[in-house]
Length: 525
Image (cartoon, rainbow, N blue to C red; front, side, top):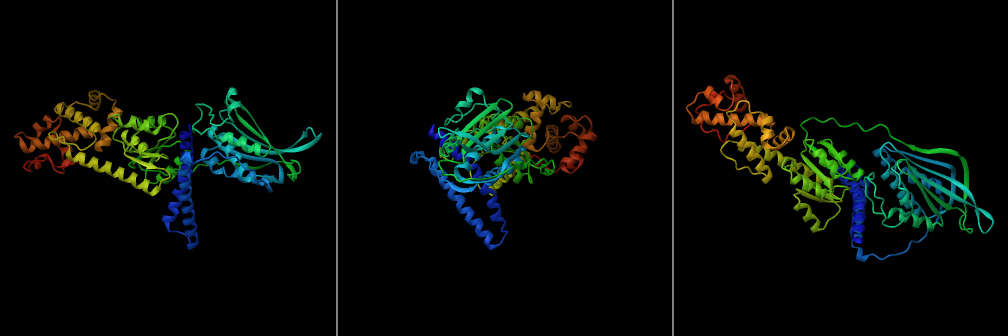
């Protein structure tokens, strides 16, 4: 349990660190800014590296000792503090298209509170609300002062009431009492992101440090409301100055306009990004969409559906995802002969050699550990795309009816050997169609199209025609048949149509090609 827990913690910390290091590396590499700004970048980079070191220490759970929490109050305007904390979620609100509202009946309230603990209370409650609220929903925070009887002193005391409400999936009634228990997780199919089961338990601990209380109400399909009650008078320790105001919406952040998508030409390479962290997936898409067409998936099941329905040139997949994880996705892709040719890069916060070995054993083409340098990842993507293009060119140059020493993966080789045998067997059959070929190959026409296009750069119809013309070129140099006879021999029932495609393929008419010598090594363009 401890190993899994700290592994999850490391994963959740490394993802935002990647979101810091990526843009920071980009700023440093750009060379823009004054000398002072560049120094600031270097300081930031150095401290990010320090955070990475701290995360690695966290993973060594044997070095950790259980310690209690200290309460360190200081005087400040709690209304302004809460407003700033809520506003830090504006970007997440925009990315997930969730309305974020902050309301207050208090304009100003100077009191003693632990800024660090209160920030963690709000951060966990808001993170939880956004995690369980679908797009175009609403998350709201409201604060007010409530006077209650202070038994047994027969007096009144003031409480600060903080409500965090959402229009999310809700919590089952029988689970509400357990949600503040450490490591407890609500098993819900509506949850996209899987947490550690410790956030709400920490909230309860920090509320107790303030001598407050926390309550929750929820309804499935409607949403949840977390109510935090914090005393603002406690044995004379808290001195509060509250300025009442009519209830007003201090913040209402809801961005309805979406960033204009870059229009890409159809010949751009197509990438699939499978990542359950919305911020990281958004960052990768935002920085790659200028060069590539992007598909997105938040888990392995969604990714597999996209892979089998679209023509994908490269897959980037996180390992730790809900439902089907990255390892299983990789195993499914690399064991399916129709899609096994697609390069796959695994992303993960797990950095042990055993875990990397597991990734490579499933057939992954590369393994990148978070946090990563975006420029290195981009270079890896570019290299894989270029390797695939080069392999396609080499493969196309080696296609002929006699030689089949194709240097590609074993499943791809088996696929192409069978395809070549079928075409060779049916060379003289004029009406041998793509439908007939897909039936002989035991797959749908769509899958056949995707596979042959990925390996050869040609659609199946062009692929068959190229092989017919390749055989025709061979017959022109080594047989005594005339052009018309050869045309019929390789499946063309119209010599003029044959001559047209032959010239497109080899640059000359069949009658001019005779006497050029063996054409078996001429590339198919």
